[in-house]
Image 1 (cartoon, rainbow, N blue to C red):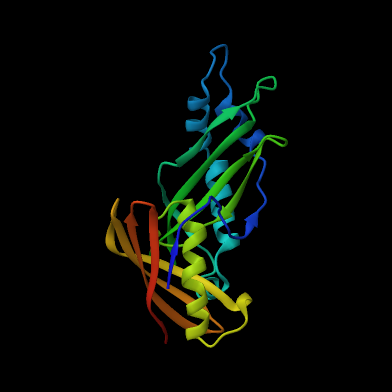
Image 2: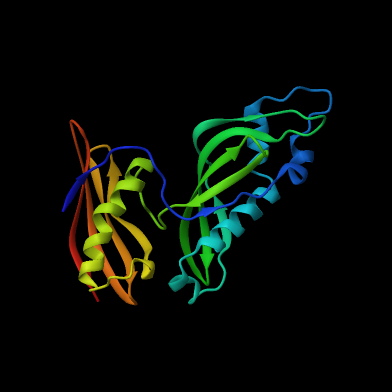
Length: 223
């Protein structure tokens, strides 16, 4: 099966943001010296409160089949954020709440002795000065947010069929792993899923052409 990627969307469980205003006030303050939004954002994503927020968000959205085998993931390293919309900060006295910004946080974690990767889409809320996050596909998924929306639409239905599963609430993507390096012309991944308690794997191929990126799911098998 093949689908052509189109549209912008990030579809996974929404996790309400935690207000970081108070915790980040000291990092954001600039005594008598104006700070740029870029400088404030650099401090923001290095603050302990932000790291704790990511840890809580990731652990709170970990798929139940994985959580049952490892109760908690611990952050080992943070990659620089992939900025989609540059952050902007308001000024209220000596506090600098975030008002604009979208980015993807990529985090390496220790999962009970195994290194894993998780990603979160994060967006600033201008009304509250907080951030909200959505869990993205786990593992080495190499696509952008367009593919983040479209790839599951082509991979998950045959996975359900292979597992002979009709309960979509029992379907979880557990891992994505690169099998061919990501380049502009395309790449390939192996997805590991669980549907109705059965493990399902699929080879997912991305091929660029003049109109976009084609996604093909092959060798979809229940184990």
